[in-house]
Image (cartoon, rainbow, N blue to C red):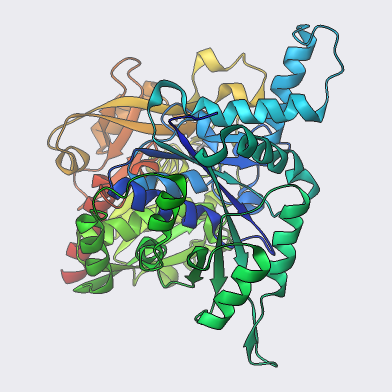
Length: 537
Ligand code: GLN
């Protein structure tokens, strides 16, 4: 059967954390730069319906799409590389697959048949992959299979790939990412784990077409020849994937290895022009040659696992490049901050960011950090819980509402300056009360945020339950903290600022999710700019 859409599957072997997401995104970037429209999808083999309820320590950041899906952080890489939004359909978990099959079974859709992993679960997986090829929106759909080949939980996915390879023949391609470890005792790179991992795939009926080999050293010709011979792939399909100093180098490294050419050839697609990567290359050029540097504190409670704030740290890389500056991020644990040590920990900082979060742990330290930034005139950006902490701090220390709090932490507080909307209070399903995805926001033109954007109505992504309590707005504004962005439909406060302060902005939404290489987020760009100004002062 021939199909106009081409499917590329990316599997992983030998070990986890090889960076399948970055390889998939880099390949996508290269074919996009040749003029193909492409999307990337991640299939996650765990039973959670989505990563929304997962602790960041388990799985890093939960990334949110415009349509309100709580997804794997790899989708953030896809968007940052491609500058094209992803959606609900781009991230599927085993939990969601089973849920949908079981729902169908309960409705009687299977007409009394025994419901089984093959064909029912595999059919559902295939359907979710094919869903992205509907409407002919994309020429190429890249599907990254989470986990490592050989895991019990990824078996149905590999089986779905095997079936699709039969059904679509030359319209499908499998790229297997493996590791070629260097044994220092032997002084050699070793191919055996790769051979075994390809064998594991073969046992499941899947012959990979291309091997991407992660390695700390160069793969010499004889080694490539050996891998090709033992793994039944052509020599030019053994791609070296060397460790890179920045993830943004990987598309260039993959281009040097001709990954995109090999892929297009094997799929029978024309190479069109050479990839148009002028913007990307100029980004890399500026990334590697900053004219200055700036120190910014990132205050959060998951700082031991940097993946928990992936989109924020990447947004700083983009914004740094826009400002021709390196951003030195100082990861500061909010649990370890208090009134006594805050000066010691933050006085050298040119800017302070207080991160999003849930629950009470670390909030006291975050509030101390806000107070320090406000009183010492250090540029401040508060995101979601960070904005809420700024509101609480202002209420306590400027409005003298000593008991001020968010009802997330203290539901009996006398001054609920951050509270849940009435309409949400009666929803019992934990996930159901969350405000998720894109909402529009009307900006005040002469504010810091208004100056950062070219337009006065913006759309930004959300992931939170609690809101600024408008009953207090008048008091706040009279005392010097004003609302500079509101939701035009509901009147909810989205942005707060202190006009007397050099640069103090709190946002209820998550600007970090929309920052890309091609379009660094204006608010991060403005914040880094303010921090630089503060540095030279
Ligand atoms: N916990 C806060 C709320 O639910 C903030 C959430 C966040 O920072 N993403 O409103």
